[in-house]
Image (cartoon, rainbow, N blue to C red; front, side, top):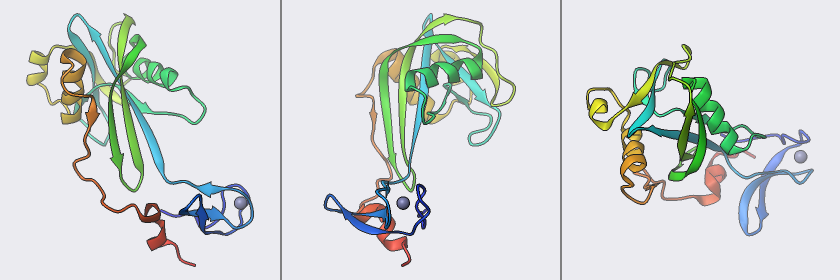
Length: 188
Ligand SMILES: [Zn+2]
């Protein structure tokens, strides 16, 4: 994915040396396209040794049980995003305790997913009926009988047992990051 025209002023974008690295930049103003990123957040709300899960009602992963979460918004503090996502998807009020895990996926869109352990405050789990069609607190034993997403299993283990470093290794690393891949796809 490349930006042919500047998002700020509409002029042509071109490869430019920015601090020693070729980057796509505006030929007219100071706008630089640093890359394509998205940041996901996930919540691990624990109550009595059980973790809050929701069943996804939409793709991707429809039918899978996952921990609640979403994507951060441009102007919303991350700890407010995760509180909001938990409430929207499950009706549970929870507050951030700490960051417990980070998954890094440098793909065409570089995704960073940050998982928070959260303190349960109030509310009985209830699905929103749109993004989720099931919600509840479940023990690891109960989860064995459920279709739990692999990534969620990993996070639940960290939340309950503190296994591992909390940093997820990328299983499909991209070897070369020459100009973040722009140099091959920019047509002049
Ligand atoms: Zn511009």
